[in-house]
Picture 1: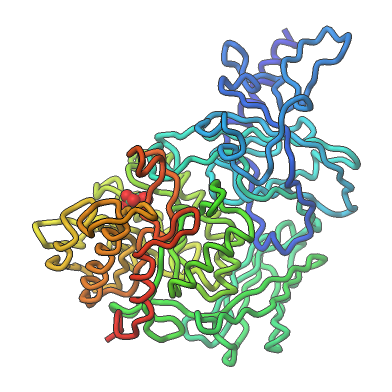
Picture 2 (picture 1 turned 180 degrees about the vertical axis):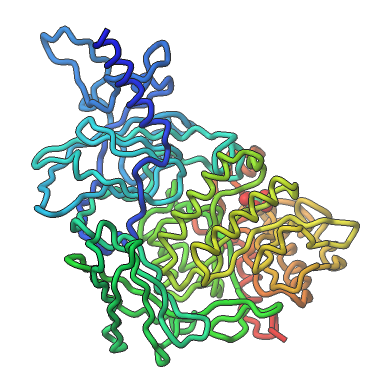
Length: 604
Ligand code: GCB
């Protein structure tokens, strides 16, 4: 009886582990400046479409799941029906879809496993850092559960101090890429569902008490660096120091009872961050035994009536939208070369701004935009028809928003947090997004909040009157006149009615073109058609007084299983200005010329 109870208890405990998708994970801010041991490389994998490694045949959680990393031993009575050592390998980071032809459309559970050597340092703690794993991840080290995570595009860190030992260790990660109606994003999107451990994995060592989070930014008056530093597990009244050696600035402050030290450093002669001069300062933080460095730019960003002010001056955001898809090889963009290629193209176009659609991109991207002076719209994947009435879905969106803002709020390039894309204008949706807008402001009061909205059309009139607009600082609008609706000539006679006295950004417009396909400008799919849509659109947009920016859809063609026209789309959304093989289409040059023309989009 006792044994039976123990087994039931064990099931319950293990069950709890899987049910709490957010268990025991945090985000170590500035993790890329921490000392770490990379776990990138070859991992063994087992494709498990029936979740055999997790459940028994009666769908009870197995207590001898694949996370135990078992193997059939010669002469043993024990039946073991898997063996990582005899299984093939995948590269981490990397989606599985582009690494194995058989897994191209696979969306279920995959087990990853590898060994690694580790020597724990005395008085240190170790966290497992995962840059992103799509969509759900369950993690064990040496057979012990460490954490679970839901959300395919945000970084997370799980403490593994207790589970690690000196010498040889093993780690098992189960990643499930099943699309879910109640997920964020929901099951239907217009991008490819790349599954797996798509970004870097590392073990990060920190001191027993350590700086886990901070927010350091210029105040709106541009007179001081303000914010706070949070130190986890610090002894009371620990002193935190923040220094900017180059500007000869430094301040010390004591932790309060919530382990936060508030920071205020009067600073009136900083060189401000801007696209023209993306100045970053080396920042030194210390608290007890912990020391950390970062590079941070200081600037102010705000709205004033219909204007967006960067460092107090009106600015127009000349942008383009981008997915995190790697040019040339396909798969998720997750290395320096991918980031360099995408941003070089954006720079060639003449952009001072990019919309990172439709989810947070790799941290390399926002580090690079900081260095290059490219302003950023950063977004969570609240996309199309989410289950807005479901509080569990709201929780997932809030969780991703928190992880996104936490990782990136010290990046000067990010000017906008976007909370959604093209959602239906319903009371449930509006309530859901109002909550997210206020969450974003509570997490970061220094930036503007936006969303890409749909507009109401009556004949040639476009009405921007979505009630969510009241809760946004900047109104984002997607429109596809000349592609999904009407003809390119109709763009010229479109009249815009914007209900609110706020800046508006056209967050998407565009048309598909197959690179190298030529014909009349009235012929869909040709480069000429796309270029013609851009010419008409740019003329119309230039006449909207409230327009303060744009990010046409999209820089590069990208995979989408919704795009099925044989011989033309073949699984790709072709609205790129550049093909995924790097061929620039005519529309690229039309937009480039417009961005070079000082008379266009002039701020009055
Ligand atoms: C949209 C979506 C974007 C799609 C695009 C398209 O409005 O926001 O994710 O890929 O249109 O090409 O239809």
